[in-house]
Image 1 (cartoon, rainbow, N blue to C red):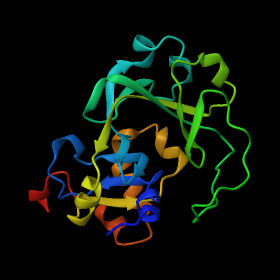
Image 2 (spheres, rainbow, N blue to C red; image 1 turned 180 degrees about the horizontal axis):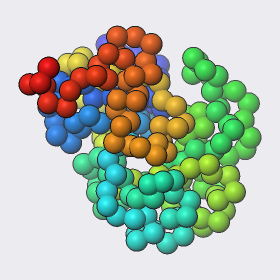
Image 3 (cartoon, one colour; image 1 turned 180 degrees about the vertical axis):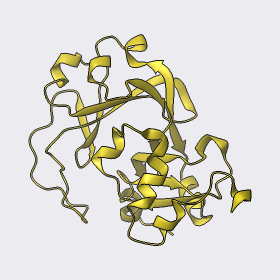
Length: 203
């Protein structure tokens, strides 16, 4: 049984789909958890770029979006809504290997810190207010959501690996390779999973 502390501690971490995960929505997905408590979980898939340019749907935000400057599919829920996730450079906010915040500068208007240097952007705010502070920005259509206890159940079933996030994960210039890259940097047997073939029958 998870305590409140254990549940909350997953906010800001990555869920990396295991090769055994059968849901096509999350095949080889890397999900950044933006919120995780006893009421449920919410995150965005970091490695599902779409062909749609940010400039086509959000005026003023396209020039702040990191390459590739396209909208990403954050998950199967509310695909008609947009979410902005950004990184403030030079402000990690947490010490390596800990969950404790280190002293940080005041967050800019329209930015709500989620974990370390990573936070949510208010897309209703004027882009020019945030432009000087943001190092990178990703726009997501939709999100990934789990009800109370649902994610914990999936974790028990071995559907996900839980690993630490890095600010660069949000703005990876090569999102299609992010699944392997995140696994490869782990100092454990997970690094070997990065070599798992796309077609399991080839193994």
